Structures are given as structure tokens and as C-alpha cells.
Image (cartoon, rainbow, N blue to C red; front, side, top):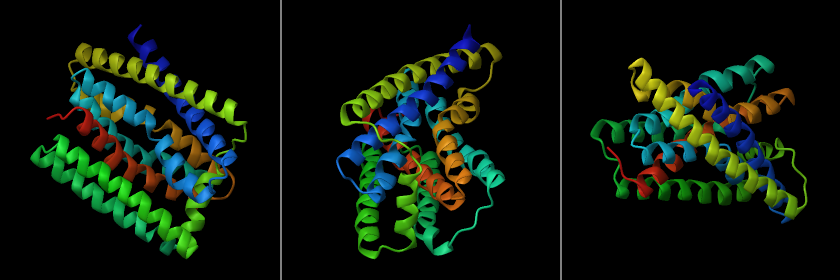
Length: 263
């Protein structure tokens, strides 16, 4: 029964995450929002919603190891699993200048995460700072890319274009809401099942967070990056992974600490 809970949670997270992204992107297109903004905001945040809901659920259940392990493990899965699959589908050939800014930011926020973990600083203030940094990063990227219109802007626009969704506004909203409901219930099943498995086998909840939960919440990124690679846009898949890792650290752990500070 426990394994069925975990499996069901993984399926709901994947389907729900896909529905949330496609529905919200479709509505954004009907509102004439540019692919650049869609790629920088909706795709990046949408594919990270499973991580967010799962971490919030884990913190609410007192499973801190799953909450933090989920983010750390998801970033590892993004680089080794998602990027690996994308590279297997299509060789990744890109302009280094298109990735320099976002890669530098990813390295910086990863170092910041190490500091927060080492000194156990996941207070509400730290959560506020992380979320503020994420909003600042998004705002700066949107304005800088719109002004420059260079390789970076093309890559971020390509992230939006990988999502095929052209529903009406009402249908798009319905799909997005249904996807959100699926993510919420999927996160509940995954966290509850993960906690039971950890206790049954006498292993750390962090191990469950780093493995089963992390891979499960990375499925939306895997789907998006695989589609981009199949279309011969593996560089867009790489950009999507970098953006997702930034969102995971600043957005997921930031909002989690802001809502429920933890140690």
C-alpha cells in the first residue's frame, strides 16, 4: 500500500505539474505575454511547483530532511539525470555567452545554500531574503533581455516556446487549477509514503528526499527538457535546468522558510 501511495504521488506530480505549466502558459499567450517572459517566469516556476508543494507538505509534517533533501536532490537530478537524458537525445551545442549570466547566478545561489545549511539559518528573515533575490533576478533578467535581445533572450524565449499549449482562457485556467490540485494531492501521497518507507527501513528521511522524492519532483523538468532536445534545442534544455535550479534554491526553500521557518 505504501509503495502504491508513492507511485500514485509521483504520477500525480508529473501529470499535475504538466497541466499547471501548460494551462498557465496557454492563458499567458492569450493575454499576449511574450515568450521571453513566459520562459523566464511561468516555465521556470511551473516546473518547480512540485518541489515547492512537496517541501511545504514535508515541513508541515515535520519531515525537514525530505524538504531540504528534495531541493538538493532535485538540483542534482536536474544536472545528472535531466541534462544527461537531454544530451543522449541530442548533443548540446550552445553559445557560452548565452548561459554565462544564469550559470554564474546558479553557482552563487548554490554557495549561498551551502552557507545556510552549514550555519542552520533557515529563518523567516532568510526566507524573505531568498524570495527577494529570486524576484530581483527575474525582474533584472526580463528587463535586461528585452533591452538587449541577444543570445540570452533567445534562449529564454525558446524555453517558453517548448511548451505546446494553445487553449482558450477558460480551458487554460481549468487545466492549470486541475494541475495544481493534482500536485497538492501528489505531494501529500509522496511525502506520507516516503516518511513511512524511511521509518520501515530505518533510514534517514533525508535519503528519501534526495532520491525518490527528488527524482519524482524533477519529472516536469525532464519532460520539458526532453521535448526541447527532440526538437534539436538541447541548449534550451540546458537553460531550463539552470533556471530550475535557481528557482529551487531561492523560491522553494525561500518560500518554505518564509511560511514555516525550520532547523
